[in-house]
Image (cartoon, rainbow, N blue to C red; front, side, top):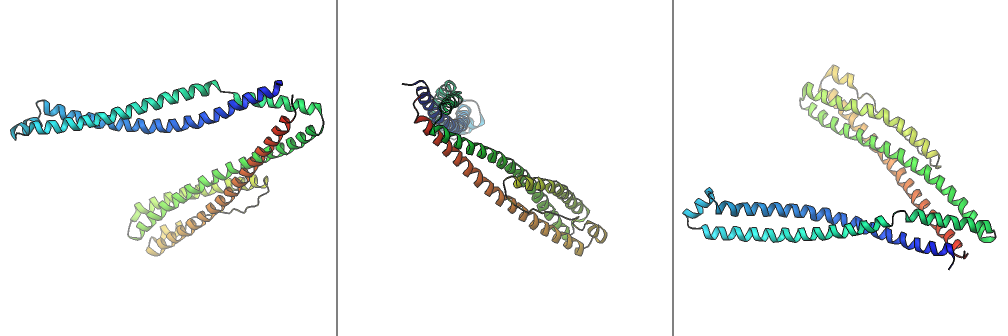
Length: 313
């Protein structure tokens, strides 16, 4: 059997095994956390039940009471039964936890032995691809075309990642603004019913937070739009929240001004939710493009591997 193909088959088998072990390890960690919590709860329950038994067997007021009414044996038997049942449940959970930890340890040990198999596979595959291309012919030409398309997709993926990162940052700020406006709305509603200076100050504190975040969001949206231009997506984002009629609210300090500010807050909430929806819609589209890019890259890689496999070396 030739040198490259033998190595590639062995390394591919290792990569497949590693993926399976990684999935198993993740599941075992989840089980470990669940049973660890369960064992802790059952141990606590057992300790409580045993404490009840110890109190009855000692010189506690409970023991004295049950002795007086002649129910000591009955109560002690019941408490011992409950303590025993709790201990049985705890022991079972502890054994299950130990078994899970043993399986996880074995799984992680095998994973450790397989570390780097993907990079070794890539290295051997790259060597064979270079050898095939050096040999020339139709297969070499097809590989070159596929690699050119792969390089373009890699570039597109980087642009998508940058756009998605910018969108996530803007979305986080939009959520912060929405939270500040919700808080301001709550204080503004209280203000209508005579909240006074405290509610006024709290309301405008949250409005200040919203206003500061809006200015930051504007810059983030500009960056988002710039990143989107690199992946040929056009999106028009505008967000602007005014000073919320603060001057009128402070000067007139009456129900008319309070209602006006509250109405402005509601308008601002609608505006920020609209902006948030725009961001989410574009993010969904970007993720769709990312998924398509990853799928095509995987298909191209599979094609290249098939071409390389067709040439024994």
